[in-house]
Length: 116
Image 1 (cartoon, one colour):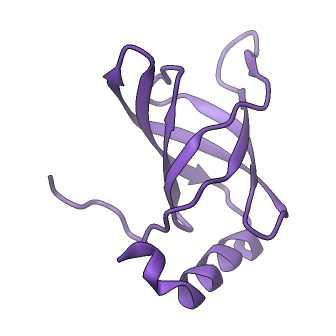
Image 2 (cartoon, rainbow, N blue to C red; image 1 turned 90 degrees about the vertical axis):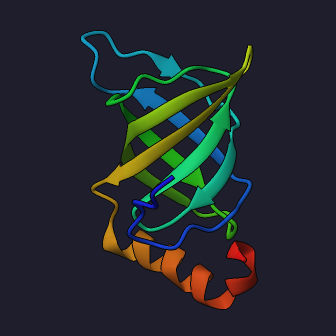
C-alpha cells in the first residue's frame, strides 16, 4: 500500500468523544473509547466497534497523554471492516489549532521509539 501520510504517526491509546456534524439531525456518539492506532498533526487512525461513513465530519474531543483535551473536527477518509464488530478508520484533522498540532509534534520529538 502506498504511504499517503504527510506527517509521522504516533501510536497512542487515548479517549475521544465524537459528534456527527454533517447530517441534518446531529447524531451524538457519547464518549466512546476507541483504540487510536496512530496520531499525527494531520490526522489519526483508530479502531472502533461502530462503522464510520467516508467523508463524514465529527466534532472531536481528544484527551491526550498530558490529560489535556484537544478539540477539533475530523473527516473520515477510510473505514474498513475488520470483523463483525471491529472497524479500522482513518481521519484527517479539519482546522486543528496550531498550538495543538505543536503539542503532537513535540511529543513525537521526545518519543521517537513510539513509531519504530
